[in-house]
Length: 232
Length: 124
Image 1: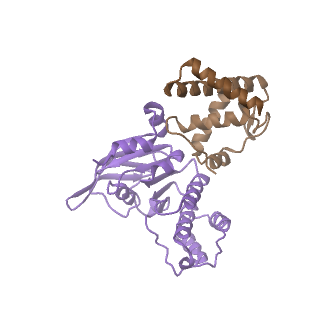
Image 2: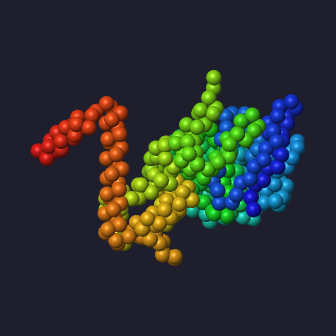
Image 3: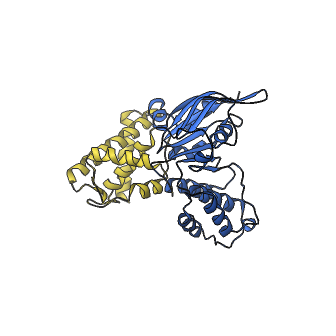
């Protein structure tokens, strides 16, 4: 059974059609790239999946259920912007996550943090932007969730931090969970994706495996994306 | 360090070729146990599903074998390794010849250049 299903899903903001009758299934065990230019509907789709927005039409189901308390318990969401209060220490944030999420694996988070040399007494405001992004990703990936929704996890970090983030996603791979990564930095994530979704203007243009694109078209996803979204 | 991949072949096929080279060159020795799928995937910077697919394909070809609980091992069958070595040699030679044709070299010119280079190497 798919972990995420969209049936005729539409979202309108006033006169702007952010998503237009989207049909989509994402199966467990897959790492999926949600790829599209700015304003294509990527973030809208992710926000609908975790219940921050409600559909104008159609429905979105997580493990067969509409977004709500039950689905939030199995969806781990990395927003585009950091939401950690900067006066908090790492320990306070760990407590916070443990209180909020039954599936939070504190040991796993501590192991990853100490690997980076981050002490529990350290405060968010003492950290660089790159370190904050890493801490936030560690928290999100330390939940034993069924669906990980990562909105632009590698935007605005240096290449070393980028490698760290991608390795953390691979290292926490769970065959019973799906990972959706929205990004426009395709070349960086391509080698770790099972499948890709091309989205533009609120429409799904393509949903296929990375191997299929490379095998049948003889080109990378990055190259195909550049062709299909060429700016004239 | 993540492995580098080129654009015109599936990632799993490139992972396979890379592992074949590691075995043929002796970086992985006959009977040696491969890292776990997860560790190997991390080393390559690829999805564990991709690594699993590559290893399954290599297993089908007999270059590696798996034991249910203890993972994947390099074959001890030298004949299999020798035949993969020969296949890789063919592949690289074909690529080289293709490149030379694209540069406008005739077969004779390519052969001549190759001889000269090999002779220089021997003198060194």
